[in-house]
Length: 269
View 1 (cartoon, one colour):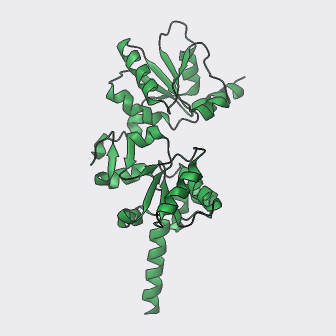
View 2: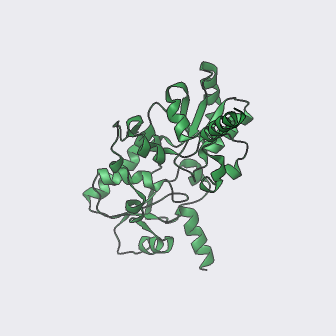
View 3: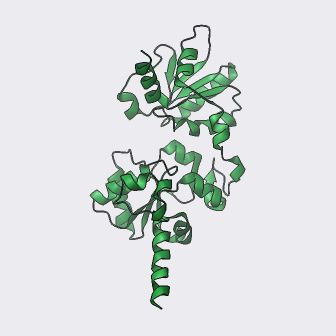
């Protein structure tokens, strides 16, 4: 009887933590040891009895999201205030999520909630992509649900459009190249640095989807190749859906983003 009870407890803990014994697959768990995680299985089991919060940007949320999720970007100045409002309205567990196992926004959100003494909060750290592939009927892609998992852009297709920072810079400074260069960093990231290709690039923040879409449409009409970079090379993959929707034939992303480019410039001096 005792062995059966102990086994039941272990199974429950594995559900809550998503098997904490496999930390190597979740690098954020070591960095945020005080954050309690929520497994994909438990989120599915309690789907109608939790508050799901998408901690990513509005652009990412509008592209691909868990059904019913509330978008509160963890980078927002009002993040804690908005989560407090959720807690006042309900005592249900609050589960934060972001893109995947190497995205730490869900952990940061949970940590911020803990500091604000908001109880019963968790990080679903397997992330959006794993959820969408396993639960297409509880996911929305480009406004459609259930989604078709094959419509999710996989890493192979994504990486086909990535070029090195060195090659990106070479093409950007080619005076005979009529390409469009877009800096899609948000206003916070942009404020911390200047543009990399002054005089040639355009700034269309991921937080301004209308402006971004207009640039994409204009480049498509002019048959211009589009070169896009962000801060660290992760947000560009969300722009790929818009590029594919508009059937842009030639587009490229800078590997590791602006930070990667600056490191390349420093080490190659």
